Image (cartoon, rainbow, N blue to C red):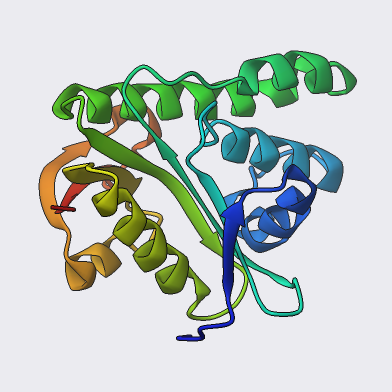
Length: 200
C-alpha cells in the first residue's frame, strides 16, 4: 500500500470503533451478548494504549481511517482500568471474569517484555489494520520515525492465536517462546512469543 498521500498522525480516540470492528470477531469471549463482547474487546485494546505520545493512526488522502499503532516505553502508564471500573458496572460479575482473565494475561506478558528491555528500547503494544497493506505501512513509517528519534530496539509480544509467523518475515527475531498455562487446553499448549527488531 505504498502511497505518498497517506497521512500519519496522532491517534484520535473517536476512531476506536474502527479498531473494534476489525477485532471483535477475532477476540470476543464465548459468553455474553454483542454488547459485552464489544466491551471486553475494547478493554483489551485500551490495555494496549499507553499514556504517551506514541499513539498513531494512518489515514488516506480523504481522511479515511486505515490503521493504528501503539507503543510503550518502560515506565509508561495505562489508564484502561479507570475506564473499566466505570463501564463494567452494566454487566454481570460472572461475565467480568473473562475481562479479568484477559487483564491478568496482558499484564503478565507486558511485565515479561518490559523486563527484557533497556531504557532506550520501545515496545509495540498493538497495531491493527482496517485495510489490506495498511498495517505494514503504518509499522514501517512509525519504525523509521522511532529510529530517527534514537530508539535502539523494538520489542513486542504475541501469542499462538495471532499470526506470529508474520514477524519472522519482517525483520524480527524471536527472543522468548513460552507456554501460558492458564490458557492451555488438554493436549494443546497456549504458546506466547516475544520478538525483537533492531531500529538502529
